[in-house]
Length: 566
Image (cartoon, rainbow, N blue to C red; front, top):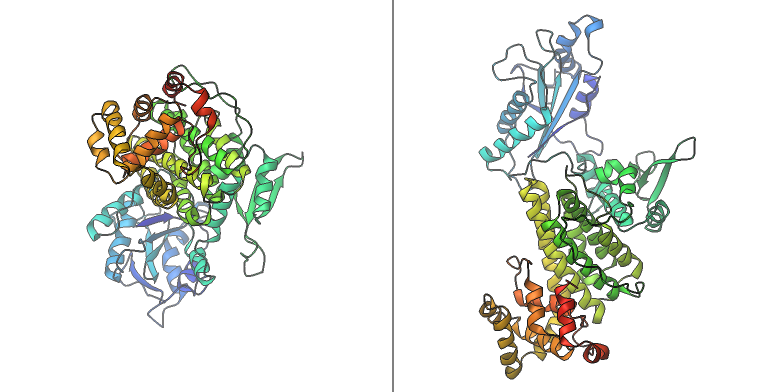
């Protein structure tokens, strides 16, 4: 159940006419009172003799009784209360009880207070009510409404428990603004899966993913087909921006524009500019692995995904062991990687990856201020993904996508745990939802390469040799892994690491050192991708092993590289 305190108004009759009217898009049905400060209040929805003006005059009487000099300019209070889509339809009596509890909790009409404000609750849809009140008490004083939004949320949690409704997590004020009822109805009429506000938020987040400048950011928005208006000061400085979808028009046929801050708190221009902070030097207490040697520029989707996997692996360490500001920056930048991955993924994984990025958007913000600059590696990874182009979904492209999704799953899981420790309930839940979408995307992306590895690893002599290696390196979990359906694929990968000149025992130890495995459906799958990344093997098992790996990388050197977290 979602209560929302709206902006104060100055015209009681205006709000009454809206509540009892047909709605902006004919979405209001059977408007009527379900409760009021007085049970004898006339209902313009059910009493043909009652008028909107009658209700307005009764509500405004305490205001009009004050001398003009003492009347508040904005005295109309408005609260909407909406049930979740999956909740049962409540009766008028139940909504009336909810209305009375809300005005009591918010200080509008405390229980038993005979001099409280006047109010009325109107129902014009199955799933929500609107409460209108005038903020002058019968005794001429103003109500005590301190922290009314938080108090309404707290009361909503109690109502959910009592009525058996969907239990929502209390927010912290950092979530994006929800679409209005009118926006949802408009989206339904135009058969949109999401409202324009949500579509624009997704488009802006994708445009910002890994962007390095205003020019690149606005260029991506324009390329995506979004209408953009820039707000420029007389000095020529850029102050902000608004965006609109070309086919989202108001009743006058004009595009409906939204500012970045109205889409999400972190999408205002000043907040986007914070992302362009130069790379920060790691602090002495950060747990970091030595940097990889200089690598050539991105040459294609597969290479970009390998680099993104390495950056994601490093970010996982920083979330688990870094300070709060660094962890918050990694989590925020992880959202950019998911946005970029969804935007460049093949068609068969795109839906799940888009849903993962959409869900994780809520997890990317909290009141813990991100220390920008520490997120440079992840932001660079997002930039590389965008500029490397769309992956084909097969061969090395498809296999490195599976590798990146596998690592991103653990990063998102780490973010969920970090938020849970901070008691960020909504963010933790959002991260868990994103993890489930990533799990589904992984199953799709990994099916072909894991099938090839499974066929290669079915030979029993090979399995017996590699089982001995596994038992030596990981005696605690060896029997669990050997019993998994994915064991043949892991056996084939262990054989590949040996053929490439690596020490598989050392690589297995590195792949599991300080790395969480409990949330994995298949430990053997996870180890396959970690080993192939650490040993620099082709992600596509059908590709030949690089000749240089087998001839120029002796086992001791490879083990050293593995111990450095490469």
